[in-house]
Image (cartoon, rainbow, N blue to C red; front, side, top):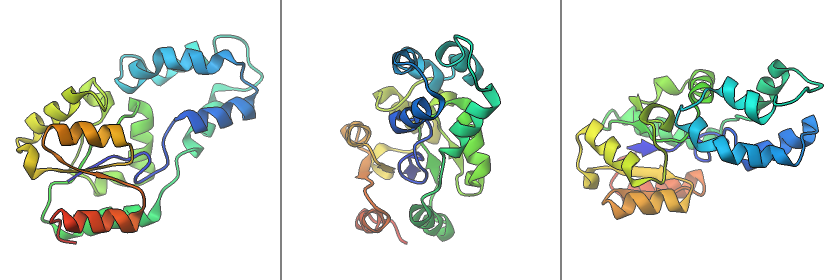
Length: 196
C-alpha cells in the first residue's frame, strides 16, 4: 500500500497556492516564483537544503521579516485531512499490508510533517523524493520503490491526488487510485481488494 502525503493525507507542503499566500503575506517580488522554479527539483531531491533554497529564493536580498517567521509560515501551511488519515488508519489497523509513503518533499519539510502529524506511527517506510534523489512522476522513482520493497508491481496499490503520478504508476503495472475524497478513495481501495 503506497500513499502520497501532500494532497491526500495533508495539504500540500509548499505548492503554488502556499507560495502565492507567502508572496502576498510577505510582499515578495514577482521574481520569487521564477527563482523557486529553478530550484524546486533540487529542493525536493535534497540536492540543496531548505536553508540554501531560502537563501537563493527569498533571502537573496534584505527583507523586513526574519527567516524564522518565514519558516513558521511554511510550517503552518501544512494541515491534516482527518477523513483521509482515518482511511489510512483503517488500512494500517488491518495489519495485512506494508504501508509506505511515496511522496515528493524536501528533506526538512518532510521531517517536520512526519513528526507533526505522527506519520511514523502509520507508515512502515518513507520513500520520499528527498531520500531517493528523484521525484514523481519520473518512472525511476517507482522502479526504485519496487526494488526496495521487493514486490511485483501488480501487488502494489498506489494512492495519489495527481493524475500524472497515478498514470506513470499504472504504466508500470501498479494499481493506481487517483484520490479525490476520503469516501471515494475508501471505495476504490475496497474495489482493488484492500480489506478495510
